[in-house]
Length: 81
Image (cartoon, rainbow, N blue to C red; front, side):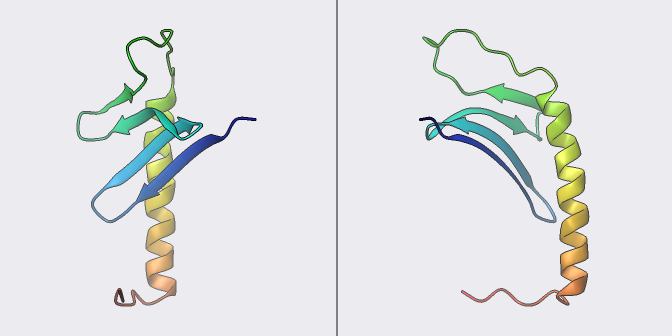
């Protein structure tokens, strides 16, 4: 049994898009550098993620649009810790 994970998240000023397997990070989008980063150790077989960065950019557009809708719907409540 393996656990496959894909996380997309965003805020007004930042975003994250990451793929993992069995609790280990495999790939993430570095939006500051404008590229995807393979996070596998050097001893792992070479692995590529074609199109993942472009997909991550698209996911950020959807996330930020959803964020704007939620901020408006919930009238931008203050964060309570």
